[in-house]
Length: 408
Image (cartoon, rainbow, N blue to C red; front, side):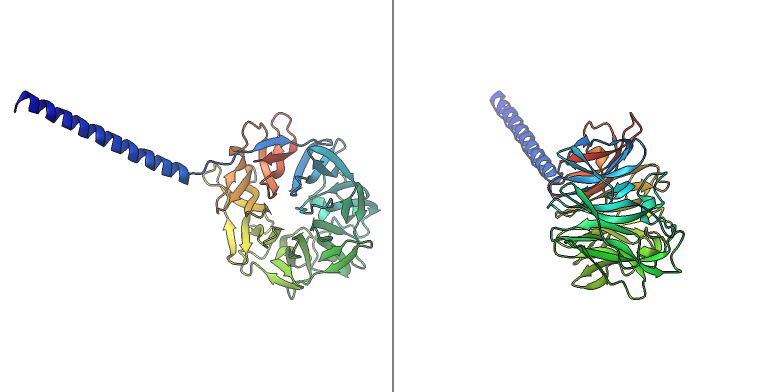
């Protein structure tokens, strides 16, 4: 082979290797682009602390599409008041005369109405703890009659109970002037447990004046129940069961949906006949909540779910890969995009983390998405249609529980 031929062959091989290198690089670039397209970047949140009334515990439990956050804030004397945060400015909603009040569930009204529960100045006539024992701080969490309240234009008023009943509880409000919750009637029921004496029924109030109360039907054979949330289509969710404690357990034998005057069991074959509780419903009628575990009658371990009309019940899992292992999941809020927020915990409830289920059965830890926010996000209670989230965080610098707002 001549020197010229050898030179041509060298040039040809070099060109071939160069072309091959370019081809491989192009393929790698295309594959990388496809991978990046398939791997959506995780949503990041700007998280801020909401002001308190001076105590060591606050929580955001509801956020509407006006970005109004409502919940509670403890004062220096340990009593807590229902609280509203608008543009981060704090408003003390007051009480109905007693030491404590709180907004505890998702209130989706955007017309300026907030609902919740408040103690009055009147003593409990039958020594009942009612549901307030689980939502207030000691030493004044019991001993006073409670009413569901409506707050509008800086005024709070109590909602009526059923004839013969003493206590009530308001949970949700839509934009049609309807409020839901539960209220006692005058029936002394031997199936009531502990300090509870009277039956309680799921209630819907039509706001007046005057405010009018109407009960909702229970699953046949049940005697007590509660409504927990309502949408603008008049769809209501809640529980049906026996009297028991007035805070769930056997009162939540059935997770139910009320629509057009009828009651439907949306979880007809739950893992256990207790703690089956819908917590929120969006305008599409999608429902989230939690169900009981057959090994834990006291509700130590719960399992989050989402229910849709087309697909029925689907379990929402706790976080994976945690040490200790997470076994508890609870869903508390849902928006129109079916983003669901709640909490994931280990068996001892020591490691509990605010989470979001974004169209998947496994959640994401919101602490991975909070940027440089220093407090630990322990619980997510609600999400609006902007994707804004509120809940409760732990501040390691002060040891306080604080209300937060997370904005995507």
